[in-house]
Length: 283
Length: 112
Image (cartoon, rainbow over all chains, first blue to last red; front, top):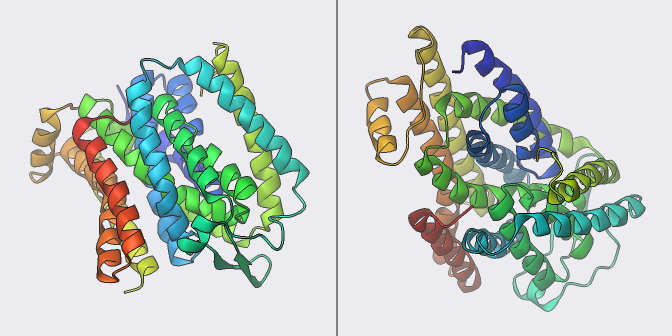
């Protein structure tokens, strides 16, 4: 049974989760699930249900700001959603055939590779003279945003779009199957494969994950895995934390975002690999 | 209205409504002496939602959750309408593809 103290503590912790989620384009579920299960003793299905609801809140709250500021690439986001949503549905279908442990190890290794690439290229946000691919030209995906840390307008092109949508499809499968991993795969893919500025990648990922999470959240809700006393403080907390996160991202230099994301990515990939070998890590 | 503002406003209104209802729900729960709330499932959700209008704490929070989940879906729907109005065929197709997959996932329960 949850008392007022639990609710207050959950609210405070979810401010941090919303902050981190908004900053890095992740839902923040990585933080919420272990906290609810380990500290609050919440059963896993209820923790996952609560975490998915909080992903919707983080995504919508941060995207509201990022979209207004043109940091989100709306066109790229909508196009990528085709991949991620299709992936999430596929994930639900193939859950029976695909062992989650294999996926954990596979994606852990891919993310480890992404970590290395990201840390090695930490000095530059994205290369100059990127040539847009055919899809990118047809859909007019190239855009620009005003970077408040650099005090200038940054123009960028999007390249290798089909590959990014393809990886997005697998990111959707992973998040559909494992409950985590959509954002953490999409951000490095946009930045490293499609050469999108890292802050745009984070903002666009935040925009995308809300849609996938909303579909999953409805399933958890009907199943009875969304507890009101967990959801209410989470919604309030992550929405507040997300507002703080969007302010910080705006004024942080891209290269610093990249290094911080690289560190987070390293930790996430190691946890995923350990989890794949059935070691008792909470993710 | 410009698409960015349209999308941003939709998201903002959805989140704000959800946060406010969650807050009211928690206040009602506190005023009622922190009674034990259990989670509802299936048709129980509809009953909980109906009780929100009588000021029931868990009903108010379920209403907040449903509005929150509907927010990104509404955002995709309103973008489709925008692209239809702008006669932007490619993006009408893209947004409708996402919307139809979402509706399929919501109705069939095949998502996560």
